Image (cartoon, rainbow, N blue to C red; front, side, top):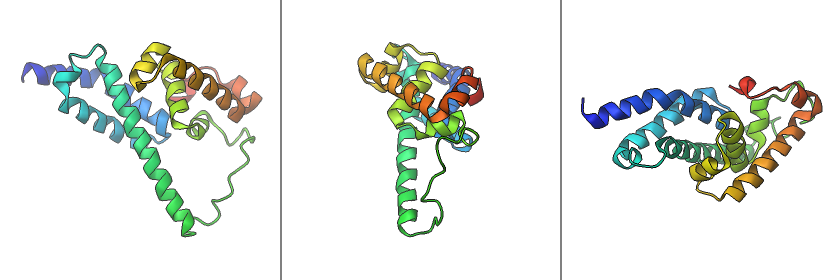
Length: 175
């Protein structure tokens, strides 16, 4: 095995689960998460010479995952709009009352956040990245990370309601 292949294999083994978990938290779909993580790692391999010399190769991989999940979510929204327009999803136009604590869990609340807020909240709190690291992953300013994280956390608290938010202790429930 070449040195590049061995280095990538070690990178894959160290970070595949983390990247899959990130994709799961961003999409809310465990079945899709492994596929997105695999697709991201395929892209990492395609650009391995550039990735391994980057300041933070994991940040590069996380950025790919966030982009892939954004595209997946957009595609899914377009498909759903098309089905709604054809009345093929009868009875799904009305959504359940978001204040019913029994219905909302952390994953469903995360799915309701706009993509950038969701990514900022997940990377900051679930992956414990600094604001600077999140900014690097997303290619945005630290100020944007601060505002998106703050808005996302506030929106999550509203979605979860005071009872559910107080019961939620850390990100373990979302993992």
